[in-house]
Image: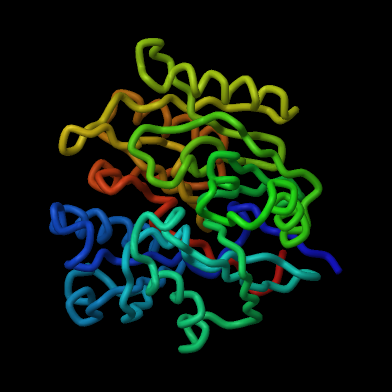
Length: 329
Protein backbone atom coordinates (compact mmCIF):
# COMPACT_ATOMS: atom_id res chain seq x y z
CA UNK A 1 0.00 0.00 0.00
CA UNK A 2 1.48 3.31 -1.13
CA UNK A 3 -0.03 6.47 0.42
CA UNK A 4 1.24 9.92 -0.49
CA UNK A 5 0.01 13.45 0.14
CA UNK A 6 0.64 15.56 -2.98
CA UNK A 7 2.58 18.81 -3.12
CA UNK A 8 0.52 21.83 -4.06
CA UNK A 9 2.34 22.28 -7.38
CA UNK A 10 0.91 18.99 -8.69
CA UNK A 11 -1.86 18.85 -11.32
CA UNK A 12 -5.29 19.89 -10.08
CA UNK A 13 -8.93 19.47 -11.06
CA UNK A 14 -10.26 22.47 -9.18
CA UNK A 15 -9.88 24.99 -6.41
CA UNK A 16 -12.76 25.37 -3.94
CA UNK A 17 -13.64 28.69 -2.29
CA UNK A 18 -16.50 29.85 -0.07
CA UNK A 19 -18.07 33.18 -1.01
CA UNK A 20 -18.60 35.11 2.26
CA UNK A 21 -22.19 34.95 3.56
CA UNK A 22 -23.78 38.34 4.27
CA UNK A 23 -24.54 37.44 7.87
CA UNK A 24 -21.14 36.38 9.12
CA UNK A 25 -18.00 37.81 10.66
CA UNK A 26 -17.62 39.77 7.41
CA UNK A 27 -20.56 42.11 8.02
CA UNK A 28 -18.15 44.97 8.82
CA UNK A 29 -16.59 44.79 5.32
CA UNK A 30 -19.07 42.80 3.24
CA UNK A 31 -18.93 44.92 0.05
CA UNK A 32 -15.13 45.08 0.07
CA UNK A 33 -14.64 41.38 0.77
CA UNK A 34 -17.10 40.44 -1.96
CA UNK A 35 -15.02 42.47 -4.42
CA UNK A 36 -11.86 40.68 -3.25
CA UNK A 37 -13.52 37.30 -3.78
CA UNK A 38 -14.87 38.22 -7.22
CA UNK A 39 -11.30 39.06 -8.28
CA UNK A 40 -9.93 35.90 -6.64
CA UNK A 41 -12.52 33.66 -8.34
CA UNK A 42 -12.01 35.31 -11.73
CA UNK A 43 -8.24 34.83 -11.54
CA UNK A 44 -8.57 31.16 -10.54
CA UNK A 45 -10.96 30.52 -13.45
CA UNK A 46 -8.37 31.76 -15.95
CA UNK A 47 -6.31 28.65 -15.18
CA UNK A 48 -8.60 25.92 -13.85
CA UNK A 49 -12.05 25.13 -12.55
CA UNK A 50 -13.19 27.10 -9.51
CA UNK A 51 -15.91 25.58 -7.33
CA UNK A 52 -17.65 28.34 -5.36
CA UNK A 53 -19.81 27.51 -2.35
CA UNK A 54 -22.26 30.34 -1.74
CA UNK A 55 -25.61 31.20 -0.15
CA UNK A 56 -27.26 32.53 -3.33
CA UNK A 57 -26.22 31.22 -6.74
CA UNK A 58 -28.39 33.62 -8.78
CA UNK A 59 -27.04 36.74 -7.10
CA UNK A 60 -23.43 35.60 -7.39
CA UNK A 61 -23.88 34.57 -11.04
CA UNK A 62 -24.92 38.11 -11.94
CA UNK A 63 -21.99 39.63 -10.00
CA UNK A 64 -19.32 37.57 -11.77
CA UNK A 65 -18.05 38.92 -15.10
CA UNK A 66 -18.03 35.38 -16.53
CA UNK A 67 -19.09 31.90 -15.44
CA UNK A 68 -16.60 30.07 -17.62
CA UNK A 69 -14.66 27.49 -15.56
CA UNK A 70 -16.82 28.31 -12.52
CA UNK A 71 -19.24 25.98 -10.71
CA UNK A 72 -21.60 27.59 -8.21
CA UNK A 73 -22.76 25.44 -5.29
CA UNK A 74 -25.49 26.65 -2.94
CA UNK A 75 -24.75 25.48 0.61
CA UNK A 76 -24.82 27.15 4.04
CA UNK A 77 -21.52 27.69 5.87
CA UNK A 78 -20.41 29.25 9.14
CA UNK A 79 -17.30 30.86 7.68
CA UNK A 80 -15.11 31.17 4.60
CA UNK A 81 -11.84 29.46 5.54
CA UNK A 82 -12.23 26.22 3.59
CA UNK A 83 -8.52 25.40 3.74
CA UNK A 84 -9.20 24.27 7.27
CA UNK A 85 -12.53 22.48 6.93
CA UNK A 86 -12.23 21.19 3.35
CA UNK A 87 -11.30 17.62 2.49
CA UNK A 88 -7.59 16.82 2.16
CA UNK A 89 -6.51 14.75 -0.85
CA UNK A 90 -4.04 11.90 -0.74
CA UNK A 91 -3.01 9.34 -3.34
CA UNK A 92 -3.30 5.67 -2.50
CA UNK A 93 -1.55 3.57 -5.12
CA UNK A 94 -1.81 6.54 -7.47
CA UNK A 95 -5.56 7.08 -7.07
CA UNK A 96 -7.05 10.06 -5.27
CA UNK A 97 -8.79 9.68 -1.93
CA UNK A 98 -10.21 12.42 0.25
CA UNK A 99 -9.70 12.59 4.00
CA UNK A 100 -12.38 14.29 6.07
CA UNK A 101 -11.13 15.27 9.52
CA UNK A 102 -13.01 16.93 12.36
CA UNK A 103 -12.99 20.72 12.19
CA UNK A 104 -13.70 22.37 15.55
CA UNK A 105 -12.90 25.97 14.57
CA UNK A 106 -9.27 26.02 15.74
CA UNK A 107 -9.85 24.54 19.16
CA UNK A 108 -13.53 25.41 19.76
CA UNK A 109 -13.02 29.15 19.27
CA UNK A 110 -16.15 29.60 17.09
CA UNK A 111 -19.29 27.81 15.89
CA UNK A 112 -18.41 25.38 13.09
CA UNK A 113 -21.09 22.71 12.75
CA UNK A 114 -21.98 23.54 9.12
CA UNK A 115 -18.35 23.91 8.08
CA UNK A 116 -17.45 20.59 9.71
CA UNK A 117 -20.06 18.85 7.55
CA UNK A 118 -19.26 20.52 4.24
CA UNK A 119 -16.97 17.82 2.77
CA UNK A 120 -19.49 15.04 3.44
CA UNK A 121 -22.22 17.13 1.86
CA UNK A 122 -20.13 17.87 -1.25
CA UNK A 123 -19.75 14.11 -1.73
CA UNK A 124 -23.36 13.32 -0.88
CA UNK A 125 -24.60 15.78 -3.49
CA UNK A 126 -22.14 14.64 -6.16
CA UNK A 127 -19.96 17.73 -6.41
CA UNK A 128 -16.93 15.70 -5.32
CA UNK A 129 -16.40 12.06 -6.27
CA UNK A 130 -14.11 9.18 -5.38
CA UNK A 131 -13.35 7.55 -2.06
CA UNK A 132 -14.04 9.56 1.10
CA UNK A 133 -12.53 8.49 4.41
CA UNK A 134 -13.70 10.09 7.66
CA UNK A 135 -11.52 10.30 10.74
CA UNK A 136 -12.24 11.00 14.41
CA UNK A 137 -9.23 13.31 14.55
CA UNK A 138 -9.02 17.11 14.53
CA UNK A 139 -6.85 18.48 11.72
CA UNK A 140 -6.90 21.61 9.57
CA UNK A 141 -5.47 21.85 6.07
CA UNK A 142 -3.60 25.04 6.87
CA UNK A 143 -1.69 23.29 9.65
CA UNK A 144 0.25 20.99 7.29
CA UNK A 145 2.37 21.40 4.16
CA UNK A 146 3.90 18.68 1.96
CA UNK A 147 6.74 18.44 -0.53
CA UNK A 148 5.01 15.51 -2.26
CA UNK A 149 7.95 13.25 -1.44
CA UNK A 150 7.10 12.11 2.06
CA UNK A 151 8.09 15.21 4.03
CA UNK A 152 5.54 17.31 5.90
CA UNK A 153 5.89 20.63 7.74
CA UNK A 154 3.76 21.64 10.73
CA UNK A 155 3.95 23.54 14.03
CA UNK A 156 3.87 22.39 17.63
CA UNK A 157 1.67 25.32 18.69
CA UNK A 158 -1.15 24.02 16.51
CA UNK A 159 -0.70 20.24 16.43
CA UNK A 160 -0.40 19.90 20.19
CA UNK A 161 -2.84 22.64 21.22
CA UNK A 162 -4.96 21.26 24.05
CA UNK A 163 -8.36 21.81 22.41
CA UNK A 164 -7.56 19.91 19.20
CA UNK A 165 -6.97 16.27 20.21
CA UNK A 166 -6.73 16.47 24.02
CA UNK A 167 -7.03 12.71 24.56
CA UNK A 168 -3.96 11.97 22.42
CA UNK A 169 -0.30 12.23 23.39
CA UNK A 170 2.18 14.11 21.22
CA UNK A 171 3.67 10.78 20.21
CA UNK A 172 0.26 9.45 19.13
CA UNK A 173 -0.53 12.60 17.13
CA UNK A 174 2.78 12.32 15.28
CA UNK A 175 2.27 8.60 14.65
CA UNK A 176 -1.23 9.24 13.28
CA UNK A 177 0.00 11.83 10.78
CA UNK A 178 2.96 9.69 9.70
CA UNK A 179 0.66 6.75 8.99
CA UNK A 180 -2.27 8.56 7.36
CA UNK A 181 -0.09 10.57 4.99
CA UNK A 182 2.60 7.98 4.30
CA UNK A 183 5.35 10.22 5.64
CA UNK A 184 9.07 9.61 5.85
CA UNK A 185 9.63 12.76 7.90
CA UNK A 186 7.44 15.11 9.90
CA UNK A 187 9.10 18.45 10.68
CA UNK A 188 7.32 20.16 13.58
CA UNK A 189 8.49 23.70 14.22
CA UNK A 190 8.50 24.82 17.85
CA UNK A 191 8.68 28.51 16.98
CA UNK A 192 6.84 30.90 14.68
CA UNK A 193 3.72 33.00 15.27
CA UNK A 194 1.96 36.05 13.82
CA UNK A 195 -0.01 38.61 15.80
CA UNK A 196 -3.76 38.40 15.16
CA UNK A 197 -3.64 34.75 14.08
CA UNK A 198 -6.61 32.68 15.35
CA UNK A 199 -5.19 29.34 14.24
CA UNK A 200 -2.37 28.80 16.77
CA UNK A 201 0.38 29.23 14.18
CA UNK A 202 -0.72 27.48 11.03
CA UNK A 203 2.26 26.52 8.91
CA UNK A 204 0.70 28.10 5.79
CA UNK A 205 1.31 31.53 7.32
CA UNK A 206 4.94 30.80 8.22
CA UNK A 207 6.87 28.31 6.06
CA UNK A 208 6.01 26.21 3.00
CA UNK A 209 7.63 24.05 0.37
CA UNK A 210 8.07 25.64 -3.05
CA UNK A 211 9.77 22.55 -4.49
CA UNK A 212 10.75 19.19 -3.05
CA UNK A 213 14.08 20.55 -1.75
CA UNK A 214 13.19 24.16 -0.89
CA UNK A 215 11.21 25.85 1.89
CA UNK A 216 10.08 29.47 1.67
CA UNK A 217 9.58 31.14 5.02
CA UNK A 218 8.60 34.49 6.51
CA UNK A 219 11.53 36.58 7.73
CA UNK A 220 11.30 39.72 9.84
CA UNK A 221 14.01 42.29 9.04
CA UNK A 222 12.90 44.91 11.56
CA UNK A 223 14.52 44.25 14.94
CA UNK A 224 11.97 46.54 16.60
CA UNK A 225 9.02 44.52 15.30
CA UNK A 226 7.29 42.34 17.91
CA UNK A 227 7.69 39.31 15.59
CA UNK A 228 11.46 39.58 15.24
CA UNK A 229 12.65 37.28 18.04
CA UNK A 230 10.10 34.53 17.46
CA UNK A 231 10.63 34.43 13.69
CA UNK A 232 14.40 34.45 14.19
CA UNK A 233 14.05 31.33 16.36
CA UNK A 234 11.93 29.73 13.62
CA UNK A 235 14.60 30.56 11.04
CA UNK A 236 17.24 28.82 13.17
CA UNK A 237 15.04 25.71 13.32
CA UNK A 238 14.55 25.72 9.56
CA UNK A 239 18.31 25.97 8.97
CA UNK A 240 18.69 22.63 10.76
CA UNK A 241 16.27 20.80 8.41
CA UNK A 242 18.74 20.36 5.57
CA UNK A 243 16.40 21.98 3.04
CA UNK A 244 17.29 24.98 0.89
CA UNK A 245 15.65 28.13 2.25
CA UNK A 246 14.11 31.19 0.60
CA UNK A 247 13.18 34.07 2.92
CA UNK A 248 10.12 36.19 2.15
CA UNK A 249 9.88 39.47 4.08
CA UNK A 250 7.21 40.05 6.68
CA UNK A 251 5.02 42.91 5.38
CA UNK A 252 4.95 46.14 7.34
CA UNK A 253 2.51 46.17 10.25
CA UNK A 254 -1.19 46.22 9.28
CA UNK A 255 -4.03 47.10 11.63
CA UNK A 256 -7.83 46.84 11.74
CA UNK A 257 -9.91 48.19 14.61
CA UNK A 258 -6.69 49.02 16.45
CA UNK A 259 -5.49 45.40 16.37
CA UNK A 260 -2.56 44.07 14.36
CA UNK A 261 -3.66 41.59 11.70
CA UNK A 262 -1.57 38.77 10.19
CA UNK A 263 -0.25 39.91 6.82
CA UNK A 264 1.99 37.26 5.27
CA UNK A 265 3.14 36.39 1.75
CA UNK A 266 3.37 32.72 2.75
CA UNK A 267 -0.38 32.39 2.13
CA UNK A 268 0.09 32.04 -1.64
CA UNK A 269 -1.87 29.45 -3.66
CA UNK A 270 -0.42 27.15 -6.31
CA UNK A 271 -2.80 26.19 -9.13
CA UNK A 272 -2.27 24.85 -12.65
CA UNK A 273 0.18 27.15 -14.46
CA UNK A 274 -0.03 29.95 -11.90
CA UNK A 275 0.90 31.17 -8.43
CA UNK A 276 -1.66 33.43 -6.76
CA UNK A 277 0.19 35.68 -4.34
CA UNK A 278 -1.47 37.87 -1.71
CA UNK A 279 -0.35 41.51 -1.82
CA UNK A 280 -1.03 44.20 0.75
CA UNK A 281 -0.22 47.55 -0.92
CA UNK A 282 3.12 47.09 0.83
CA UNK A 283 6.67 48.18 0.05
CA UNK A 284 7.65 44.50 -0.26
CA UNK A 285 4.92 43.47 -2.75
CA UNK A 286 6.97 43.94 -5.92
CA UNK A 287 10.07 42.26 -4.48
CA UNK A 288 8.05 39.22 -3.40
CA UNK A 289 6.35 38.85 -6.80
CA UNK A 290 9.80 38.86 -8.43
CA UNK A 291 11.01 36.19 -5.99
CA UNK A 292 8.10 33.95 -6.93
CA UNK A 293 8.79 34.56 -10.64
CA UNK A 294 12.40 33.37 -10.17
CA UNK A 295 11.31 30.17 -8.43
CA UNK A 296 8.33 29.42 -10.70
CA UNK A 297 9.53 30.51 -14.18
CA UNK A 298 7.00 28.23 -15.89
CA UNK A 299 4.00 29.73 -14.05
CA UNK A 300 2.26 33.07 -14.27
CA UNK A 301 2.64 35.04 -11.04
CA UNK A 302 -0.63 36.79 -10.15
CA UNK A 303 -0.74 39.30 -7.32
CA UNK A 304 -4.13 39.66 -5.64
CA UNK A 305 -4.76 42.55 -3.26
CA UNK A 306 -5.63 40.87 0.04
CA UNK A 307 -5.67 43.67 2.61
CA UNK A 308 -9.39 43.15 3.25
CA UNK A 309 -9.01 39.36 3.64
CA UNK A 310 -6.62 39.68 6.56
CA UNK A 311 -9.17 41.72 8.53
CA UNK A 312 -10.60 38.33 9.50
CA UNK A 313 -7.11 36.87 9.99
CA UNK A 314 -6.66 34.80 6.83
CA UNK A 315 -5.51 35.26 3.25
CA UNK A 316 -5.69 33.48 -0.14
CA UNK A 317 -4.48 30.04 0.93
CA UNK A 318 -6.76 30.02 3.98
CA UNK A 319 -9.65 30.93 1.67
CA UNK A 320 -9.24 28.02 -0.77
CA UNK A 321 -8.76 24.24 -1.00
CA UNK A 322 -7.10 22.33 -3.85
CA UNK A 323 -8.71 19.31 -5.48
CA UNK A 324 -6.06 17.24 -7.26
CA UNK A 325 -6.44 15.06 -10.35
CA UNK A 326 -8.14 11.70 -9.83
CA UNK A 327 -4.93 9.91 -10.79
CA UNK A 328 -1.41 11.03 -9.90
CA UNK A 329 0.73 12.01 -12.87
